[in-house]
Image 1 (tube, rainbow, N blue to C red):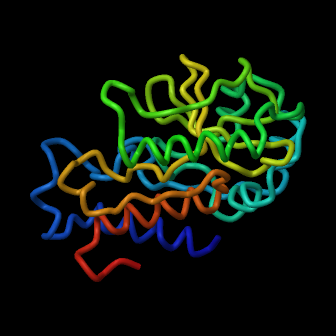
Image 2: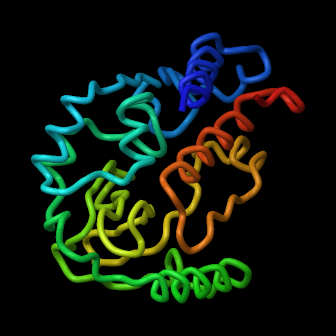
Length: 227
């Protein structure tokens, strides 16, 4: 986890230093290039054990180990999309009961991921963002850990065989899909530098977060200089 903090420090240093190779990408009055960084500004604040225990008590469930360790060593703030929420935001925005069974299965995850992956290879016109699966609302067995903008959030499963997996959720459609690597930038000239990263049907929090760090590093660094 300490390497995550070091990589966040590197991204912050690159953005605030505005190296020459990135000058042409900055727009007027825009402080950061990476999507969502205007909000989280690469800040991260590790939580103390008491705060993590209090969050688990408020939610009524133990947090997945990798995410729990992340909160203790890296902490909320910087992250994919608009960043990782603080505990109070998680408690406020999580709508189902995190301690009850998560309604989707590993088989569901595999089927919807395979359907989406096939769609990516040959997307159908006017089919939106591709296949997804519907879950009951409010959805038990998970917490919401951050927003992707509009009505989209990132969910972390807290019960059952999919505990610790991360999902992309479109709340207005009750649509769910195993999380893919978050886009680092919405600047098309930058985005093209990073090849798609597929995380499979059961993406873990660690893999999802590391993929964002890697994509951001690729987009901000000169060729051959990524960490």
